[in-house]
Image (cartoon, rainbow, N blue to C red; front, side, top):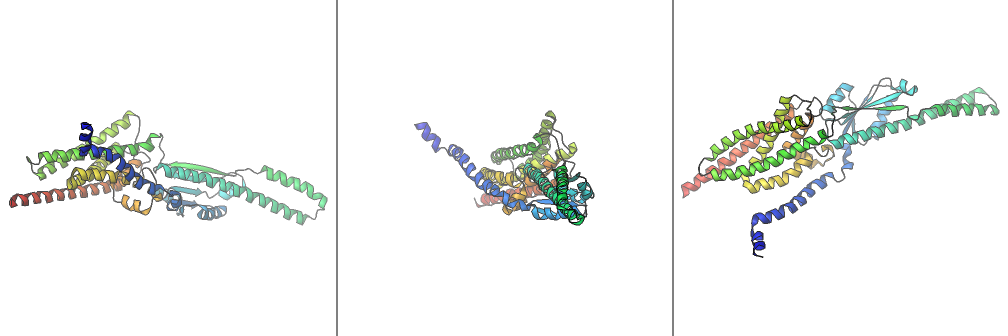
Length: 394
């Protein structure tokens, strides 16, 4: 029994028992409110409708504006709509061609659905489902429209022909033949995946990279904090900080090659140049590491642990890696705008899907890292000043 008492008197042992419970409570309290009733927020997602047909296309565009559960826009042309989608301003582009009415009369009409693959997986699934539902709705409406038109034209013909009632039967037979010749699906859906990339792993790899960077940064910060405490009597805080900062920069540039090596080893290709991928990965790791170094220097090991417990679920859910940001409550979007995972998520997704620019994401992460480093320096300066004042007082 003495060993059991000794274990429960040990604070680290107790913390090890409590952390899993606290983690579950904290994680679920953050994630569940974010995902609950997400279907009621689909109006935050944007779909662009580009209509080039002045007849039936105009009517269809108006119907889609009213029927779709998303926010709809009508860009001037297809190129502008696709460019806006690549910039994250829309999740899908619906294009109605200029010859839609003519082809509809021939039973060969088609509408194109451009779905951005450089987006969270849930967003892609929602848009593909929406495209299928739109196609089914248009076909149902088209069939009834054509049937009613034939019936109306036939009725007019009968009324104007002056034929006796006994002649109506052959006309009715002709009408049945005409209706039977109609295609059940006169409108063909042309779903086009923009910025597509082969392989399921590419939808999961960005999340795996973030998890390894996050966990690695936490453990590295804790180890660094312990080491700094032991070296504090031998070297000044400013010297330790300067050397550590240089090591962090070099380490970030080196550790990113591990990801690149794994990708190469398993045949996972990037859509960007290797140097661009390398810089993005290095900036992502350095920014996350600098964030925890800031908490570690301000609040010590306990502060690092608390920051990890809180920031992990918040960054995971608000970054868009697991769930579309458009479906999140405004609180999570506001918080996500100030956390590095949001920009790292967008950048890491784009290096796998499409030749899209990541300069904005790279710039924001470097600015964030600079702020974190500056705050860390101020924390160390304050500690050094307090220590000097305490020494003078003694």
